[in-house]
Length: 401
Image (tube, rainbow, N blue to C red; front, side, top):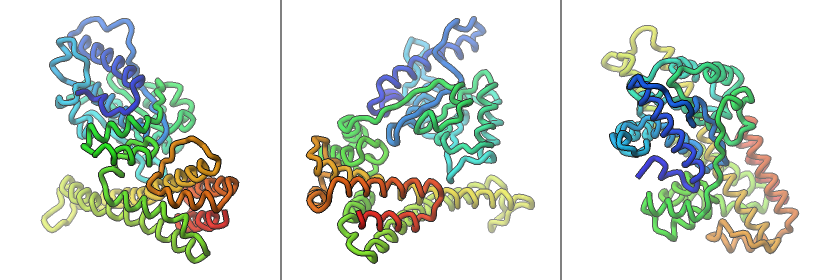
């Protein structure tokens, strides 16, 4: 077992990170023993992980963070860091290590106020770990001010600080930041690799694992959710039934409302699970009196938490919609493959009857227009167009073909 086991289909990336972790361990060990530092090292202070959605860029960064914090005694005997079970590895993987700070967008952007404390922490020595690690999961969502704050920290980092930035592509990151990072690009893992992971790690039946991996086209997180969550399978089935329902204007508007409502329900469920717990934990940290009364001067802190939770609900709703739009895209891609007689494997084999029906009843040109309509909806949501308006425009375009 090692921290690299969950990097599905990323053998080259794992090898690079493993080598860097070994050299990082040698640097820290030499410094602690007051010995001369190695003349060469494959370790650097800033890394940029890119790759398509589902490739596992955040997982790669977190696995690397765990390897850097590994305290397994086997290292002294020549073993590689990243055992996966020592306290350093375990807490880093769980996200509870004191010297691994994670920044993720809770709204459309990562604001400078969300980065301020983290940037300040990056200039301090690790509290009890081997490195001070800052993991930015959505570097593409840094706005101008927060990106400039990160740039200053990356330009002149503390000796034992490591920045791990994750983004879909290298072009999504400020050129001045990416020029100071070592770049690793992850690829979409194969369907077989994802299915094998679901069987091996999550105990999913092989047939169900293969179906989930095929339906999500190698997206690791979505495949796991589809294979293990009946509600996720039902939501996907509802989305795949949608193309056959769009026979009149009223049906288009109703389908749009249902998609938006389902996404809102997802966001509500997440909020119910997280918001109350976060509020109680913050009140306890602020020293709230019995009955929930906050100390004087702390109301602003609670207001900041409420604002963050509101932004997170908005993003969760849009992320849920994006999953549905991804399912629609693969559905119409399958239709197009059938129309063109392509040998590309069908992703939605469980919807074969609907695929055949649309393939016979429309032309490849109309299918392409429908794929473009889904893409236009995703772009509109990225521009913060009201979700219902964007989805209604899409469903009307899908009907027209």
